[in-house]
Length: 155
Image 1 (cartoon, one colour):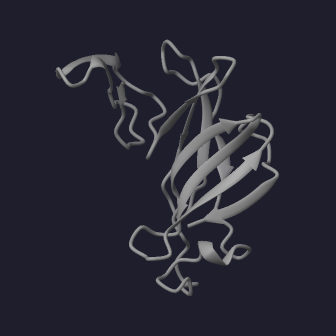
Image 2 (cartoon, helix red, strand yellow):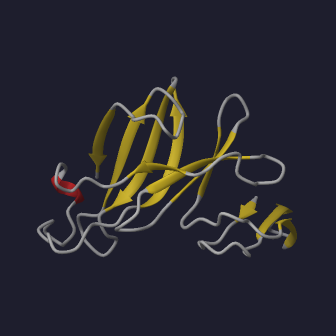
């Protein structure tokens, strides 16, 4: 198990445990240099290891490949998705999705692979509204620089 808090500071510790119920923890990484807000980890079929993160109404969610042993980035983090409330009405901020004065928030990045397709999932536009939903971007390539082929929202 890996415990990772939400931060963009470089002096944040990642903790690991093989016995969390026994409260036995060890320092996995003393200083995680790139940080990450609302992170999720993903290991692909070929063993490559990734982190996806983001929680903002100004910046996109990001993806980056990490070294499995050191948790250090193998490249630069790549923008994955920024909400498009002008295109998808459900992404608009506000109780009735009618607030055009404040950009919507995206959070909760998560990657899943099923039957050869990658599903990049996220939550939007704001947890305080009844219209808070899950969105998914679907693609056939895992590369964080590729543009997934479809978008849809589920509630």
